[in-house]
Length: 206
Image (cartoon, rainbow, N blue to C red; front, top):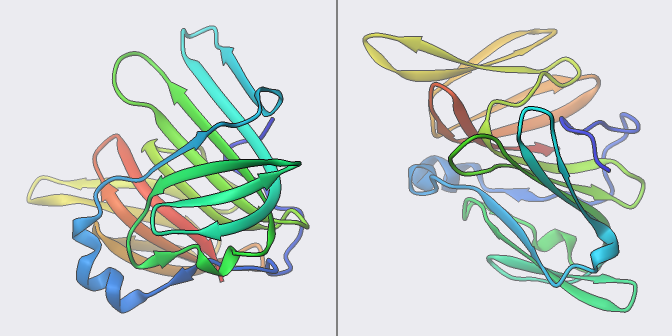
């Protein structure tokens, strides 16, 4: 099953990209406080459930197929001969329409620990395995490659996100946008929501 944080196979750009309207995100980002992904009618062979020693429960789904169509809040993926609907809530300034007609891989992990809502990780890759988009909502993720994400707290202000790479630290408020280069990859970070212990963001390849 998928490993999280997600790993990439090489530094080449993916063959398809999600589109990001920076001006629209700046204008309306505060309206998009939740990120969410779920899969309807996934073939059971592509799904698994596991429990951990700490009592947490994780549901994982891995799919690969042709994107038949993309709507505002879902896309249709043809997996073998079955149509599977992937529903999502993402900022209106980010569009998955460029993926229509492309073969992609989709990975979804929903991890439940203690009480409260799940931590959700959703990853889209091109057919060569290169990451197009990583959406995360919930507990802070583990460090990935050269990227670390932390909430910085100041008694006089709201928390800010510190994104550390080999080149330095980028600090931003929520909602906010940042761009940086990690391991030869150009990335755009769209920060949707930030708390002391949890975060919602999308990381897009450029």
